[in-house]
Length: 374
Image 1 (spheres, rainbow, N blue to C red):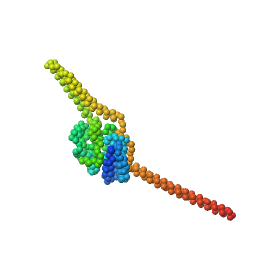
Image 2: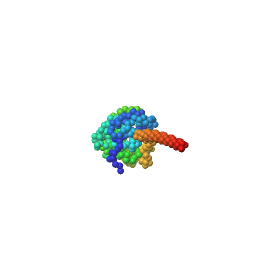
Image 3: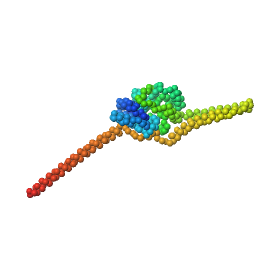
């Protein structure tokens, strides 16, 4: 059982930036994030999660280490491959130690001014545990995409227990106890928007307008969004399975009624039974319904298969932070000082030995002269 009331932390705020092939966007946005947290009290933590990028992200991070203020711990977590944004966020949350934890996109579309509003609201109202940003308008989305999204949220919604707000993404600020609650959830197929709602806590939603990307383009396309939607549906809704049951009952009822009609028509009216075209059409219709139902059930079984294997959410190939770099640099400097001191001490010792040797020789010479005159 996890203690979700523990807010003890060495850092005041942690900001998580998941990145995938967005080195140039990170180069522009990371200095703004460091300037933002530099004005906060105590120490701060910035975690950059490299989700298998193939660009020069590491060079951008190394350059940022040079300009990183001492009160900020800048950390890079490099995953062994691209595991997806949900896993990258989970990796960042697992290493987040701040009393307040924020998640932002590295492309700069999430305004830091809105994050400042979230922080002020949470400080002034201790009862608030999480503040989520809701994108007020999405002019770039087509009517088809908006229709699919509306249907998706209607399908997975469970307002009796929790509410998954449409357009409420990963841009949010939460207390450490919410982070610990999220980390206690063991599923591998993670739909973070649903997990935020499932853990509960006092949540406030704050509308915002997304800024223009600093550079690059979004890595999400219709296919990846559709795959994420399937994960969300199979993780948070049983409605497709219930719809299959209802569909089967309705088709069976219609088939029974139609069969009764054919029997009555044949016996009472004397009409011939319809030919093979009706039979073939009926078989094709029922076969199509069965294949659709098997496909939906297969999606749920596939999710169960992924969960049963219990593979880790992600694999970390490298973890670097500015504190360790500074410690290693200080160790190198101290080693150099110790080595120089050792050389100096050795030189002094050698000089002393030479002086002692010369004094001994002079003493022996004096003794030999005295013995000669005696």
